[in-house]
Amino acid sequence: MTNAPAPTLFERIIAREIPAQIVYEDENYIAIKDIAPKAPVHLLVIPKKVSSRLDEITAEAEMGRLWLTAIKVAAQHLSDYRLIVNVGKGGGQEVFHTHVHVLGGWDSAQAVGFGQ
Ligand code: 5GP
Image 1 (tube, rainbow, N blue to C red):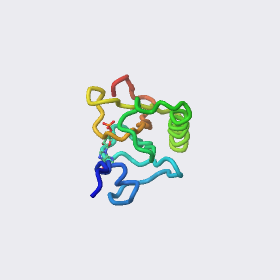
Image 2 (image 1 turned 30 degrees about the horizontal axis):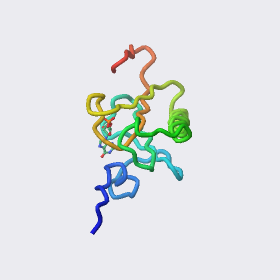
Image 3 (image 1 turned 90 degrees about the horizontal axis):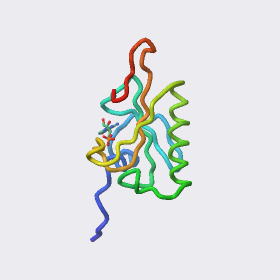
């Protein structure tokens, strides 16, 4: 009998229990296409080490690696982009396994306002 918490949705994707379109993977991170894209390109960069929300990550190196990986993944797909992290229910977070949204690919003629 174990008291381990149930795996998060993203842990199940990392374990290949749930299918996803994987666009990047290394020892510590995975990046997938969002199932309900809010932009022409919408990726999720996910640390394999689970934390519920961004503000649980307190180590500078870990925080830095997450953002550097998000920037690397973004640059593989886009020249211009937006990085977003929803923190907590009130911040719009639905999946409590920290992840960075990479959004972009809008037509440059299209207005891209904050909040879109
Ligand atoms: P949050 O609201 O937690 O910041 O973002 C969670 C994101 O995960 C949402 O944009 C949502 O569309 C995405 N998502 C939810 N379930 C799945 C899934 O099963 N597969 C993939 N690829 N993305 C998902």
